[in-house]
Every structure is written in C-alpha cells, then in structure tokens.
Image (cartoon, rainbow, N blue to C red):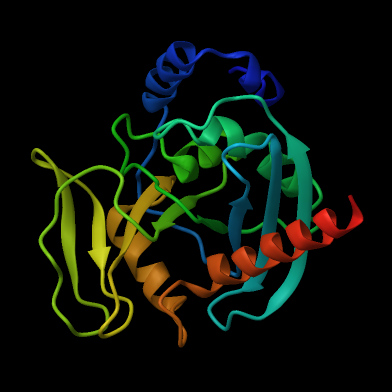
Length: 227
C-alpha cells in the first residue's frame, strides 16, 4: 500500500489508479461480533487552503455515551477533487486515530462508503487502512440513482448503480432530506443502515458524526484564533 503521508505526492491519475487497486480488497461480509464502541469521524477544511482538521469521537453503543475524543491538524497539497477527497482527508484522520486509547468496533465517517464511482469513498478507504469495520453516512449523494424514500422516519430506498445496490437513501427524520448510508469495509449493506438507525437521536445526522462535526469545527476555530 502507498503510505498516506505520500498521498500529496500523487497525481490525480495515480490516485484513481490506486483506488482501483484498493477496490479489490473491499470486504462487505456481515460483521459477526458485538459492537460495544462506535466512532464518529469528520474532517473540516477550506478547499482553497492546505490545513486539514480531523476529529474522532468514541461512544458506547447503543447508548451513545461519549468516552473519548481525538483530534489532529495537518496540511496537504493534494488538490480538492470530487471522488478523490480521501487523499486530502485520510492523513489527518489517521493522525487522530493513532491517538485513541479505545479502538472502536465500528467507525461511521461523514462521507461515502462504496457509494462512489470506484467504490472507494472515505469510509471504505479508511476502513481498508485501519482494518476497522466502517460505514459511510453522507449528507448528499455522490454516485448512484435512487427514488425518494417515504416520508416516515427510517423509510429507505436503495441507492443503485446499474444493478448494484451501493447503499440507501435513508429518511432519518420526517420532513428532512434523506441521508445516504453505504457500507465501507468489513460490514454488510443491511447492517450499515441498521447501525445508523440506532445512532439517530433528535437530529437528522447520526450522533457519532454529528459530535465529530462539532469537534472539528471547535478545533478549527480555536486554531484560527491562535494563528
């Protein structure tokens, strides 16, 4: 595998070729062990700047009590390109991941799993590197077609690429736009959406990634105040 610290040295064409190599390693078999700890991970950056802020929050599952947080601030020169954002985000996320004392049984990342043109969204890419079961929970669609799910909470419809189901458009709250849930690595399609269902509280976004989002925004503001 290419060392993540070398990602910024890749050209976009080389990054796409690497995604195609990694695709062969994806495992979507059902997770067969109990989940005690779940992590939410998020990234914040300005697409015109090199600084990347990463945050990971560890929660108990299914009661969703926060037990640990880890953050990292790094820089990258890899360009902001749709479908290749993992090459900007993953080095910072791995820095935060290495600081964790309690490893999660499952990670939920704010972004795509296999719901990606080459099946290598941030959740899949990160899961492959860490060997941690991973799920992508995105606020918008990147790849695939879907019919609007029903209006009731937890209604869902498949997200399709030709005949392949990549994930689900999932109505987490009534009168809210759906979120897009897809497996990343070492977890099944149906498990992914069931776990996300258990992570919905009073917000549209699942609690692990919602808290990670708040964390990265906080460290971004604090860092800018110091600069």
